[in-house]
Image (tube, rainbow, N blue to C red; front, side, top):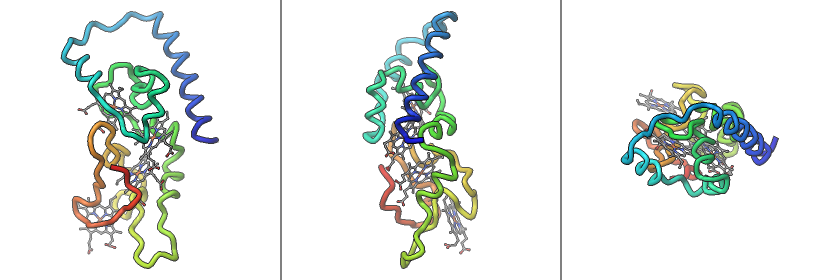
Length: 143
Ligand code: HEC
Ligand code: HEC
Ligand code: HEC
Ligand code: HEC
């Protein structure tokens, strides 16, 4: 399944959810400051195409909620990005590299179990968690 087919499925699911949500009561007003914080939030350049789905839908794509308060669940990232096995396969060191860096998505300490947002932030600069102890170079890590 291509990433665009996955996006189509997510959008379809969101549409059904919206129809369902209209039949349930709206939550109480969250307050002006909170609404301002939400509308000030920016997303990464590589995720800009997701904004074409509409602002509220684009928040829901990751958070599953219209008014997010907590970091999203990895399952929502994986709806578009595939499985943790596929993610690990993308960054598997090539055997012909002289000094390959270890796979950040499948490490000797944590396997494939580190939540995505520990390294890939969305509303602030990303950081490679491994480098709080190591000095690995990851040229493909987007800031
Ligand atoms: C609705 C679909 C969708 C969701 C949900 C989503 N992404 Fe993405 N993501 C994309 C698309 C499309 C791209 C740009 C195409 C690409 O590079 O694969 C992208 C790009 C990225 C990239 C840059 C890839 C590169 O080439 O360097 C990272 C990192 C990433 N996403 C991480 C995440 C994380 C972490 C989450 C969850 C918090 C997430 N994504 C949720 C669709 C999604
Ligand atoms: C321990 C830190 C860490 C975690 C946790 C992590 N990543 Fe990454 N990710 C990286 C690094 C570092 C790179 C760049 C690798 C490189 O330069 O070869 C990367 C690259 C990527 C890319 C681009 C790969 C490519 O080669 O084009 C995607 C997509 C991605 N990560 C998605 C995810 C998703 C989805 C999750 C959660 C399931 C996740 N990552 C969890 C550190 C992490
Ligand atoms: C591509 C995935 C993605 C999209 C789209 C996205 N977020 Fe997030 N959001 C994250 C991640 C990952 C975190 C974890 C903290 C971080 O990375 O900054 C987060 C954290 C948050 C938090 C909690 C901040 C905290 O203190 O932990 C709020 C609030 C939030 N997002 C609001 C929004 C709003 C509003 C939108 C729509 C405009 C949105 N997000 C769209 C991925 C996303
Ligand atoms: C809290 C500190 C810490 C973090 C975070 C951490 N490591 Fe380590 N790592 C260590 C220590 C300590 C050793 C043992 C060093 C030794 O035996 O020489 C080690 C050893 C290793 C080794 C084997 C020795 C080597 O250098 O070849 C690899 C590979 C490795 N870590 C990869 C990672 C990856 C990938 C991440 C991120 C997903 C990570 N580590 C995160 C502390 C950490």
